[in-house]
Length: 119
Image (tube, rainbow, N blue to C red; front, side, top):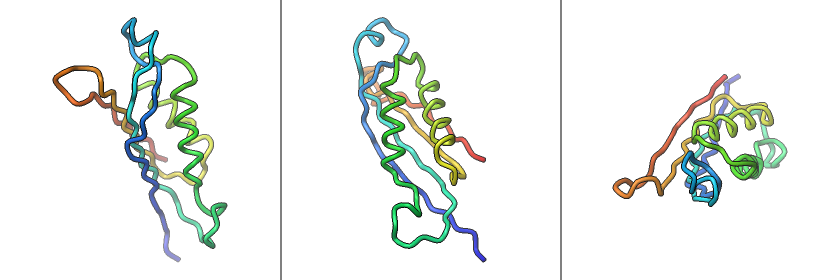
């Protein structure tokens, strides 16, 4: 029997959140852009959402973690999101997340942090 896997890719999700170390970042929201790739083990499925990962779950986790409270570092938010996804979704092999802050410096499009967690 062959081992199977598949990926769910979430691209350029924009969330307004309180993030950053500057005083202004603690009192007003700013957009962040999230990209996520999840590698999952694939069991047999019958064209039924209950047989695969419902990606609405991932989207909701990202929104909830991004809006829960002010966070100083992008790295902390990425860690919070990855840990929660691994806790709630059992068939994950690997997750890569990239979080970008597009309004940091006037001379670059964005500043990003990318993290990968795997079993």
